[in-house]
Image (cartoon, rainbow, N blue to C red; front, side, top):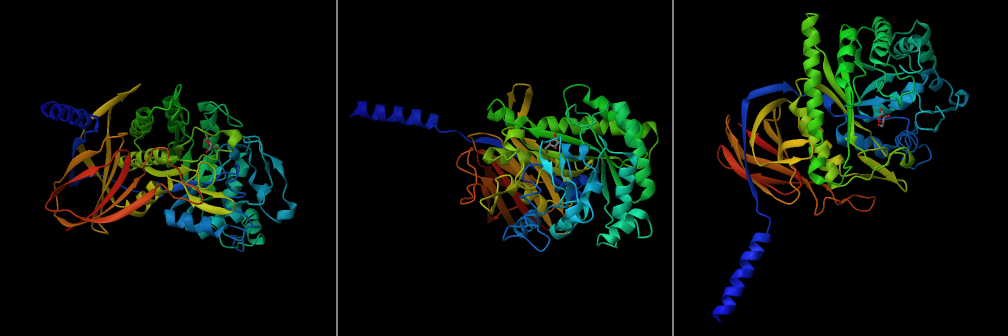
Length: 507
Ligand code: AHR
């Protein structure tokens, strides 16, 4: 009998040790520690003439979902539901060979051209007027990127005139003739795409790009001085990437309002911890670029701010040109998107625009298969940020366990941002638990105003990190519930590999 008891006790001990033990953490939030106002433009996306993003994505006149302009109503609705504030177009690599005048006027007269970026034939059915109709229907600001690869200075300047000038000039009259007498007043204009990359049509070195972009910027601003210009910053962090940004900022500082950065994360070596750490690189590139912006602004005694537009980011590593970039995302990727968003929110004082690449089908939060639109796992964290994170970023203090993974050192398991939305009277906590299999019991200390006791928790999680969604099943999505939190602080356990958003009502 005694022997049996001992064996039973030993087995119990062994099995307890096999249970993953929870980790412990502490988060402190103080409403007075504001670090920057969140710009609505942080919740942007991107539509490029690539694969099924435009044709078969936003535009499909044959579909029963098409509106009278040929744009899909389900895509428009899902874009609105996502809370998309700004959409970048027409590329991407595509724009470096795009001549915008190919895409205006009678559709049957428009040329079909080979796109050398992605190897497709561009029918030019969706051009400037059509795409601007789409952004209007989707309730988003348009952001047009001009061709600094094979494009001319006149093309850049004329595009601004076509979109923004009152009638009475050649291009604005052409716009009126094409059915839109009122100026569109497109505010955001990009000075080329990834011009630092050798893969870009018309790739230039930093000096040559800066000289050319400066001349384009002058003509574009002289055509409409209300526009905001975004210079093409580093997309390639391998070599002298910071030097590219320094040259561009030194040359263009008088004319630009933003410098763009790009980043794509991949789970290249199938190591969860490394994948979860990739956005620390994004934060570094933002900090380094912010330093260079400060250096240039102080050198030229500038009053005008220059911000960062992170106008391409996402998980992208499974499909390249062959797969036309139709990534099927999983739970793990949703965590990385939440981590990207936390980086942008934490740096909201300097990052004033961010655009997930892209919107539909192509490395996108929504997919259409067999004529049906469905939402990928990455849709949900993005939507939670876009819908709820408005107001001021607060510096959140976090104490938790950390890990090393390859070149990434001391990565905290909990990644946290805190936002105070004065309009809704909410304190919003965005918490990613990077840990693959351990929950983290966290004490949340509010150092300022009283909590009312009411909170809504939304968790994006799923049984397995490899869980995906499809047109029949949404395994990964946000699930909300109301909770009561007592006193000035409370405890909350963040489950393994989860993104949790807590919206806490405060007095
Ligand atoms: O978003 C896909 C591609 O990634 C874009 O065309 C390019 O700018 C980047 O390299």
